Length: 175
Image (cartoon, rainbow, N blue to C red; front, side, top):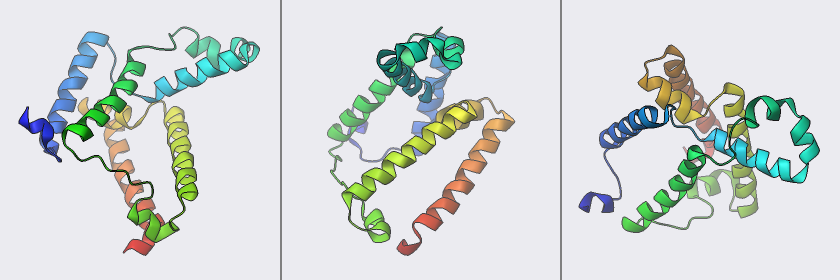
């Protein structure tokens, strides 16, 4: 268990573990890992509670959400990701509380409100884009990449190229 206390793990080891996890997921659950659908189920649950009439008459709910449980094993995965990250940071003694990262301060100033709004908008854009695309980063990059699907590899290349371009634009003051 000594390796659990390391601050950084080998990316090769972690990649191998993720690949094995995907194999287990597909073998035992018949589905590959993903997280964005869990967020959609939570939103659907909230919407069904707040506006039951709309939820019952929405085409999206009727065709997609209605036939699936709101809370399923992928939702449990999202909860486990949070607690697993927390436990990992506690075991490795690498937990820090940085409300505004230094690279953000250099480029956008020290305002916590601005940082929270930026993170919130970024999160909304990521989930919105993932739902339009029909899956999240883990779904496309990892799952389809493991299957050697052309769409998975195109997504991986697009992800890295877009990430480099956007980061160089947003964080141009940090150079």
